[in-house]
View 1: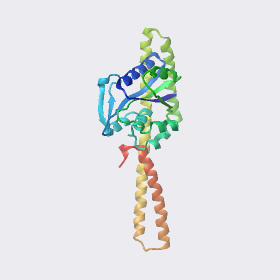
View 2 (view 1 turned 180 degrees about the horizontal axis):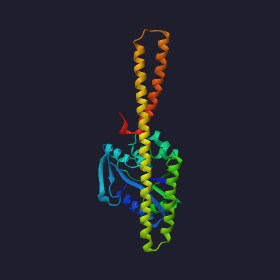
View 3 (view 1 turned 60 degrees about the vertical axis):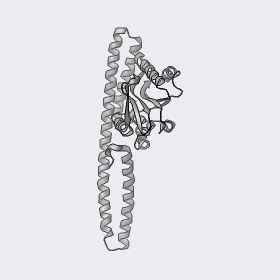
Length: 272
C-alpha cells in the first residue's frame, strides 16, 4: 500500500538534497516513488513550485489560484494533501473520506504551511519506514506519514493493487539485477507507474462527473421547490397553506445543506 509523506524544511539546500536521497532510494529499489512535488510558500498568497524536482534554479512562482488549478491536474492523494497542507483545498475535510487518512495526520497537515516553508509531498510505496527515515535524518527534523488507500470500486481498486504488486516485484528484481538488466527493469517500472497514474486520473474524472450530475439535479429540484413556495406565498392564507410552506422550507433547507457539501467536494471548478 502506498503512503503519503510530508517533509517540511526551512532551508532550500536541505530540501533539494533530501529529494535527491528519496530519488536514490527509488532508483535502488528500496522504495517506489509514485508522485511528488516540492512547494514553497511565499507572501501574499503566492507559492513556488520546483519545476524539474531536482535543481534549485527550477523554481516557478504561482499565485494561490494558479496552484489550486494545478492541483486539479494531480490526481490522487498528493494533490489533495498539497491543497490541505497549503490551505488551498476547497472543502478538503469533506473530501477526506476518499482516502484512508488517519485523523491525526489530517490535523497535522491541515493549513500548516507558513511563509518560507518548503515541503516535499510525495506518494511512496515502502515496505518499511526505515529507508526514508534514515536517509532523511541528516536533512529533516520531521516526517509526517499516513497510509493513503484510494477508495474506488472494488474492481478498479483491485486493478490498482495488481499494478502496485507488479511494481513491487520489479523492485525486488532491481536489487539483484546486473547493470544491463537494471535498464530494462527501470523502464518497466516507469511504464507501470504511468499505467497506475492513468487509471487514478480516469477514476478521478469519473467521480467529478458523477458529483456534477448530482449537483445539477439538486439545483433543478431546489429551484422547483422555491418556485412552488413563491406560488403558495401568493395564495390565500390558510392553515393548510402555512403547513405546506413550512414543509417546503424544511425540504429547501435540507437540499441547500446537500448542495453545500457537493460544492465542497467538487471544488472551485464547478462552483457558481
